[in-house]
Image (cartoon, rainbow, N blue to C red; front, side):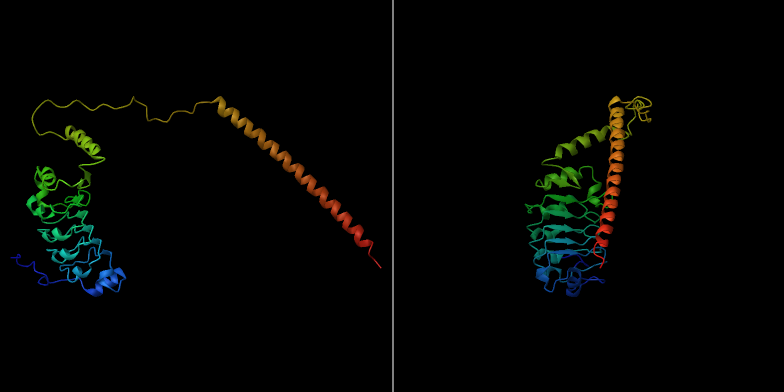
Length: 261
């Protein structure tokens, strides 16, 4: 039995209609829509969205959705963003067999068990349930065992909350976590840590006076010589053009006088 208030059509507020989908996508047939951005519209009901059978990329972030029922028919969906809504479960996504990337941060997912419905999605590689930059999270993320629980439940994931956990590059993220651990302030009593020391000697970052270079000086000298030579050639060319103009003007006047009748 569905929780009260989660049945499609019961919520009061903006809902998805064919007119909305056509105006947003520019397509006349709902089946032809491949990409759809419906961010921040205050939507509470997905309406006829399930009729977009060819949909591959969908952004529903920043709305007021409490259930995703119509998405169960979108078998071609590969990228889905439902961040910053009011979702307590993701069960309809179990039928989205081609889903690869899912952002569900900023919802009401209370326990890792709410992710069990995603275990059958063999292509799911990237999952985001927490976004520190956007200050979005889920209640389940508060548990210290949250990352390990998600990895155990969904072993096929390669990226969790933007951090690569398996595959190429995962070693880098693990190294960052190992380095970050000792840098966190400790609440346990004990000897105070040594005062941090600069990595470089004093004055390292101060601007240094330029060093003279014989190679640089020789290059500047050769450049000046070449520039002077160019000026000389320019003057010679101007002189040659002036002589040619005088010669042509005198020849023209002589020829015009020979044709006087």
